[in-house]
Length: 191
Image (tube, rainbow, N blue to C red):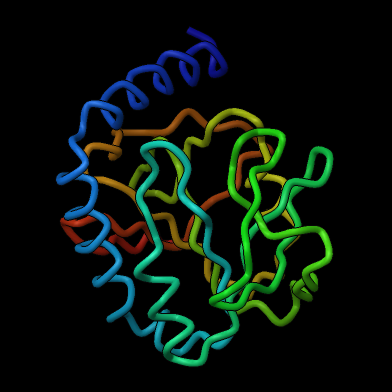
């Protein structure tokens, strides 16, 4: 089976599994995974962090975002601009508006983050493997963003335990992660 066909099949399976979680299961998983990330050395050392605004059944980072603001971190969220994501500074009170894809994002007028100032980025995914592989939604937005980040930026995936797969089918353009956090723990991916 071709890599793209494997990805399509895997995406469908993982989306169904994620949607099957109850609201209570999603909330508990978000609290557990977020707490693990917040206690990590990578998170504590980071001054400028990029998060995401959960959409659908993605793991919700609202508590982690509140923790970041309370700790005085500079927080950025992605914004879709054509075929790319840009990162924009957000304050606690920054209103988010749905993008053309339905994902809440900062308004266009919010300041962009200089990627060279970024210390850590937390990315969603549908599936993860222990070698840093990440299966996204299929649009390539995060892969293109990860490719533009300086090497020093820590790339961390976060999700539910059910999102682990043996091996994410990878193509040359797929970005890799330094670590993945789920409620069950933190996995360093060795990249």
